[in-house]
Amino acid sequence: MLRISTKSIYESGVTQMNSLQTALNRSQMQLSSNRKNLTPADDPVATARALEVTQAQSINTQFVTNRSNAKDLLSQETNALDSTNSLLTSITELVVHAGNGGLTDTDRASLATQLQGNISDMLAQANTADGAGGYLFSGFKSTTVPYTQTATGAAYQGDQGQRILQVASARSVPVSDSGSDVFDSNLTGNGTFATAAAPGNFARGGSGIVSAGSVANAALLTGHQYAITFTVAPGAGGATTYAVTDTTLGVPVPNPAVQVPYVSGQSISFDGQQLDIKGAPANGDQFTLQPSTKESVFTTLQNLLTVLRAPGSGAAGQAALTNGLNVAHNLIDTASTNVLTIQAAVGSRLKEIDTLDTAGDDINLQYATTLSGLQDLNTVAAISLFTQQQTTLQAAQKSFTQMSGLSLFNYITA
Image (cartoon, rainbow, N blue to C red):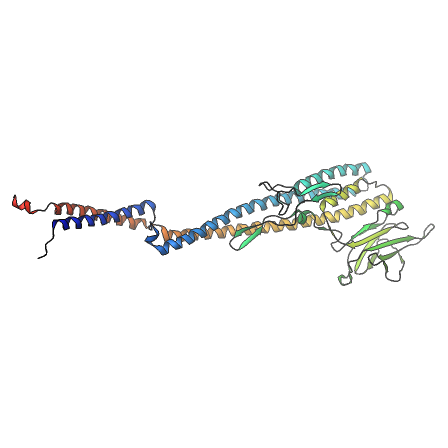
């Protein structure tokens, strides 16, 4: 017959109650923290997976911050571009009004004063701050003031960089545009070549007005510079003719030279280009063609100021005014189109960020669900287990008390 000592009974009872107490304490800690795994040892695989998900969730949270910053910068750029385009629209109206033949030189001088204010406003838009100690349109040189005013317009101090911000795991979005792209990339003329009246035409009394021209045959374009020179025969009613010279090569077009009779408004075509000249050019008057180049809007506006301040009386003065206004009008239209194009690109970026925000919210919800499955406690089951463990411990304590009270001396003394 196996004999069980009193010491063994005590040790067994205490060990059992300690085990039950430990289990009860663990359940209480799980309930208070709402976590089923209190230490990595409880479930190493789930703990490692939870760490991975938590890190991915932190990165996704950073992308949310980046997208918010990107939206702030792009919204500021949109506002600046809106204001710039409004200014260009106002200046276009001013150019159209300046072409009114009933205006005097004094009237146009008043328009020049108004234009000077528009130029100051345009410069302010080009130097828009980004709200973080930098400037929107200075490229990578974000702390450098983009434009400083000069006698010929404004000089760009930034660079051609486009700042980029990562807004998703596999997507980076430009959050700025350089001033050179926004304000300095306006092609002169019709985008292929630019026409102009020589400054000396006014002094000679010529009243010829040149059109912007167009491309008749792209395959024949040479990219050269040309001059159309007029000759007026002496005497009243003398015939007016013109000749075309390729000034890049220094040869007439066609070669040998041909004096072509001039008819006002009639198309003049050569080397894949065509244009027309209206009015009465004087003897020796010239009109030039050259490949389109990029011109700053500030240069255009400064040149327009010169046109408005120049005398515009008489046929020659009106022709010089009209030629100058036509050049400015074409360039301002080009500048406005360029600003609208960039504005559309900015709007597209903002829309993409909104889409990424929605996707980011979905991913964050997925991460939260995964973490909940790995870490969160089943509260109902845990409470049920806690109650069961509490009852078991109480029963063990009560039974231990009764067992510890059993002794042979109880029967001897009875």
